[in-house]
Length: 639
Ligand code: ADP
Ligand code: MG
Image (cartoon, rainbow, N blue to C red):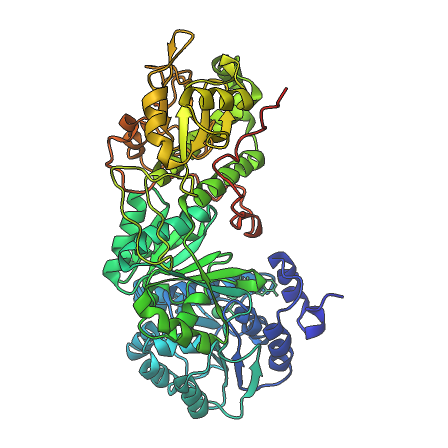
């Protein structure tokens, strides 16, 4: 016997619950449902967002409604149109095997006469926003004088939004002997006041600690300089390729600006704020729900009541003015038992706010640093590999395979993998190579080096690219010896030698750089000029780099511009110029068109159809010891 059956719910509801896929009642449901079914009582139920409050009142409500009576018997007040529609929809789902129950949603921004008409046809349950409800009452379009149940859902948010007066006025239009059920995540004074004023001896249910943040949400902050906020946001998104998030800004203007920038930079983002028309907001929410939008940039007001499952991250692009608001924000993630992360991008001057929030949520923040370019590249690389692995093959493709095989003929599996991965990976590596890292607790900002791409290899060593490799009968030992001899360097002066087929990498300390460049660039090997360059590279193999002088654009083949095969690009343009250097040699020229201090363009491949993991597997993998050499499949053997 499943646990829902023990709560006293009838057959038709149990059947609907089966369809919904709920296996066990949540805690608030387990506590509230039997009480509400058994007795006619007022109730105050406090439970975090995402704990299933809708069903906690919805199931008993449906069961208690008299379906044969067409009069309005229940009013559910909820803060936003969004929630209003959602609750209506849920109630319809709950009652789908119960004949004759009609639920009507009443909210602003839609035709009031149409809503009135629907009610007239017989609606036992009205789900309404306070503003529109008040409007309807004023115009005499609705009669709630005989209702049996009034539910105040998300009461704290309603009051937060300034609906106190409306609520009071609406409640005074209802009969005294009705039952009032108040559901809320928190119990601020105003909610307590409503409860005291309009409820009689309510049973109180509390799930989890009052006022504390949901245990399924972990809180992190990233300290950055104010001007790096946006860059930090992008990096966090890049470091979480499957991010599905709400990004909170303080003002409508910032919201719009951040969303626009993200879109421009190729992310699937959208803005949600009060200056949008209702139709626009609906469109945005639909895309967000459908997961065509990965980052919903929103104001607090617009995001109230956003109730979308599986949000992986809440990002506080800016902290809210009122610290209490933080709770509402972070409650958008970690719902229904899923894990979520609430991120704060914070500047030094705001740091003390973090401690205040910690006191309120009774949870500690973890301080983290913005991932470095190398880490992001590695994450993206692994992500891409996984994505390829998980991609389901649509057999429509079979028709094209002969032609494709023709094109790719002669490539080894290894080469093919490199190339495939490079298609998408190159833009990240190209971007992050020339952008400094931005963690701020590391002290002062590093010198900007716009003209000079930042070296990836740390420890102060310089990494070089040289156009000789195994094809020239070198392995790492012999190349090392050759370099030492040619450059007249000591035993350990050349290190991390990594030999590829047509080219190699090696390191020296910076003091030898001048010599390396001078000498090696003037040496010939079997009649061929050696070409050495300081590598902007991290770990070879990703370029089509045959290294032949004058070459560089070797076997890359006719790729589509913007060539990602992993999802349709969002914008037809955009990526082109940015990617054009991806097949060229890593010489200075390759970086000339530094128009792009903007983000690496992303594929728009984030679609509802894409196989998405539920979060866990996409956590950032640990950065490996030396990314500089890590994608190398194997060390050259010494024999
Ligand atoms: P709240 O109002 O407390 O914020 P909701 O009622 O909106 O939470 O529920 C959050 C999510 O959890 C919804 O997607 C809902 O379908 C789901 N849910 C609710 N109850 C259960 C349950 N018993 N088992 C599984 N999922 C549930
Ligand atoms: Mg709710």
